Image (cartoon, rainbow over all chains, first blue to last red; front, side, top):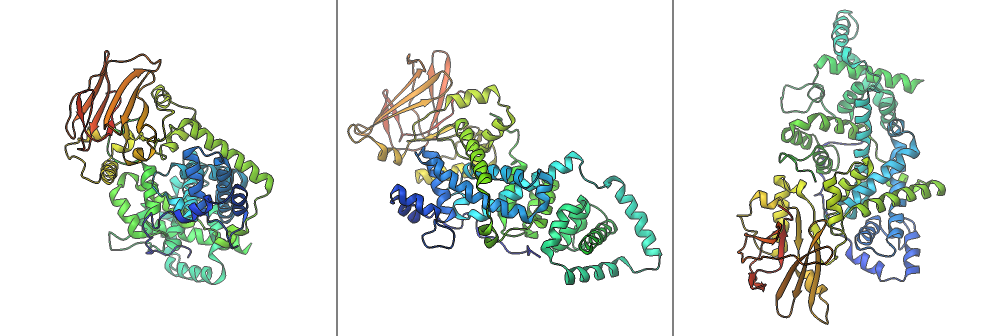
Length: 263
Length: 277
């Protein structure tokens, strides 16, 4: 699982702005500054993303002559992050009109969020990569919300609950494996056979909304389907449905994923 | 400018706080937010789903990502245009997070007459002081707390407790403090600030550092003077700047270092200006 629960982050502003590095950079001549900005990550004298971000924000607020140069460099770095994240999340491109459109839109949104952060130093100045990824998630959330409100979903959600109730009754009375047994077997097969990262792509692109949510809460959020502890977060509580319905969604999701991976 | 009818933060603010509450998904954090903001539970659940099913590129993958030159140029061009658009619509010195709402206005093409007036009114301004337009944010308890903490850190003392929430819901906050001393012109030690308080009117503040006097002169944009009535005031009391037609602006004195202007006793030049009431 990519995200394990319980790891609390450091405070939102975990470090000071890199004032020393900024001052040292600004002490360079114009040609040297340009040269330093071109030095790639991992090389000596590479200028950290956070430093460039601080320079851009300062330049932007104080109308520096070379404000656009710093902005362009920050945009270049943001674009690399956004493109890499978007590649790993095909659902974003599917909903956002393709990779290029997503990168365009997300970059603009990240940049605006960056200049709009009133904290000093702002989040991007102390954790650039984390800031960009979180703003990407914000944008992705809006895409999924648009899809939800636009009725693009392939779910037949209104009738699903009733169907599930009927289906689960017949499942249980058929004398075949119980849902729990099936779930365990499928889960084992899933964990043994496939990389979860690939599955994330399928979850985003191939699953209807309710199956996708149930699967994500169960396997990526590591939530139980149901619990006697009323304060525990469970799939049932998150989705506001019955345990049978939640189990059904998860089984359907697993079946779809396995089918796609085998094909 | 929109005034929120209650003290609850927006769903966007809640989601942003939630996403920043922990580095990775934390059920305890989600539980906490669901309890605090039950009205946004649907959005919190949806956001959690997106968060959980999304995959983050590694540092190596990011560095290996090659954006074609033409595509990068296009991205930079669009983003820079967006940035300039926001900058043009954002008053100098305005709290940067206001930029987002300005951006939204620009993008949607909807801007109220009131906002148009407000934007025209406060730009451009001297960089030696800072203006924060934050009525929307300061209507929330959390924002007022942040504002109070900020003011207290600025002043190095407690902000008077008799400042009411209504007073704290100011329209413009102008502070003139230590950075002004540094920015004083060495030759004259006089600070001159033009403060635009409405589309057609402005207040000119001249602070003579040597004598410690402050001259506050409201005038119309065309330069014609307005009558000014400044009353003596104590900490926490509003000071009214009045012209013939009524209120022009109100200031709240929030420190106790005295100075005089127009025969009136003023405190250290730290003002909260409310604008038209």
